[in-house]
Image 1 (cartoon, rainbow, N blue to C red):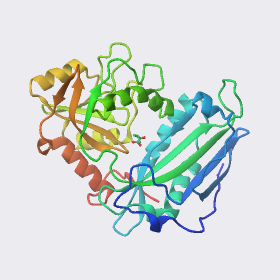
Image 2 (cartoon, helix red, strand yellow):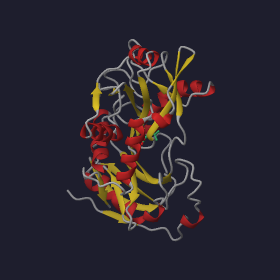
Image 3 (cartoon, rainbow, N blue to C red):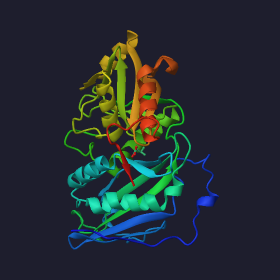
Image 4 (tube, rainbow, N blue to C red):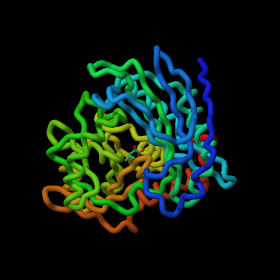
Length: 352
Ligand code: COI
């Protein structure tokens, strides 16, 4: 089955009004968006149209029971100005993994990949030119039955819109180890990219922000002992000469940046361990001076260095960032590939 994508262009672009040097993350939207509706067991018309509000019934199931999934990926430009996407097939794979977990229909490649390519091509002038800038692409799907009973919906809407962005975190952050609230439990939805995971984190994050932390370091639901992720990104620890990140145990997101980092590290003879890591191991390594770097990794955050970790009313502070060999090298390498300064030997950059 081949899905056609129709296009209705804006009459007047808003591009000239945008100050690309001062773009807050996620608040500026490009001229167009894509919308596709699933009904009667298949995807119907898919259309790219001017960015606008959606018209929905107040009884739409997503408002009541949160059957929703989303993705985040980025577009860049090469030296000639041609647009490229970073590893979009990984996002398609994860979107459909999330769809299965949330009992939603698969999104076909024709709509997801071709839709992103058409949309980004149309709005390519919105891709920032500056170092660190990119076009953040947000595909999402939600349940759209007009029904208040609880069941998997029969109707869905898939939408893609884009935002020109700079770094999600403009400076190194402080995170707090969470030992009361829980983001994910085994058998839950922690490894699906669904809005409910993020909604469930807000209470703890808001409390942590009030005392000076930006994000949480989430721990397991049973013992609050094993480290999961930060909520906005996966997490890595450099202990002596080893780089450790929690293994994919069903509770953490299968990050595309996480996977890219593991590939880069392994290819460059770093010692990498994907395994359970406990708070105790991390605190002990800090006490012994072996904890050299802690950083988060995600599409929006890229690589976010962590300057302190709040634990039991105390801050574990990290050494000065200039000495951070691993995360500085990873940042330069990843950004170098995305901005066409370093050859893309993995074929990660996909031409639009
Ligand atoms: C992403 O990195 O794409 C996310 O979805 C995380 C969110 C904090 C923007």
